[in-house]
Image (cartoon, helix red, strand yellow):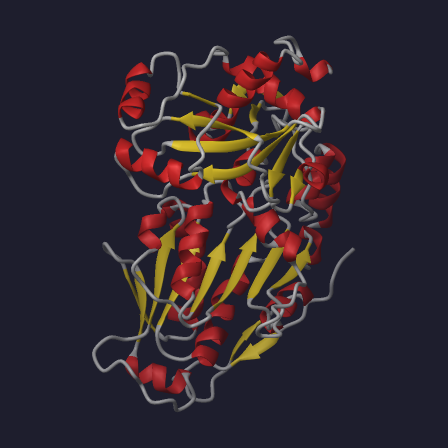
Length: 446
């Protein structure tokens, strides 16, 4: 199916009566016209999502006025390869609004004279500092702090390297001005973007009456220039999950997910009040930069465990600070706290010296521990509060590497980045072993 090309005409600043024309298809136009606080564009590969970003940001600065704006990619190389060339073509070559300046702070500076025309006569407010578009990448959340922005364009935010912490940092930068954001991405995996944005599409903010997340989806073939032969070949040759993700822009569960029995509809719940008589358990993963912990409570009537809190600090802390923060989350203490690899006795000693005893795990093989957690999910014995955003992001991103045939291997992809999954594995396997209900055999046969 082909879509007839459509276009809109935008008048650039400072070029007299000359008109620059951009030809956009229906999906791109819908995104440009959206009034949502967040405009989420899910598009198939080569669907034309990135080329609409610079024009959206151009429209946004005309609405919101002088100030700083953000353009963020998942990684620095991807920003250099894809986002920046598209941006410079529109803002620097076509519209001649100013110039891009590299260096430590990568930014596009709008020429003061052009800004007056760009904003249709609005007086220029920055006598010495021009309005800017600041470029950043999401692998380093700290690089997105210490600035205030009136709007943001996030490209390929669905990639695994676009961290939740970076997205949260961007929200803090937009907060003062209630800035809008455009997100253009392919739905690569079931992570934070699906839970926090995709699943909330269409909701109306009761305070503003504005749609919080307006989602626009278009397939690769909805781009009139996308070859029908390529579409048909991909549909014929690719695994169904991969075609749906990358060409139809539909979230689906990819191959290789470790906890493929995890069902959000059954296993994610609204928070409840934890009764005082329920036992509480703690799993800890030690690390110089990312010490993390998961908190669980046990319902003696249903025999279910509730994941009710997560600990994942965004800055480096001392062991004393870790202990104090964990105890502030759960001041009543724990029936059992387990964590760390067998070789991390020094960590356990230091935690005990600061007031929090943590036992060495008895279940040490990673795969055996995963099997315990898998079985707990499959038996519906583990419920998770929907407020645990970092945990849920890890859970639906925890997967095995795929081989050249898109089949899962034994290797866990980016294993060292899943600190909350390790915290969970330590404590759930220990508790399950003590309860004696699940044995360390192939749990996936249950």
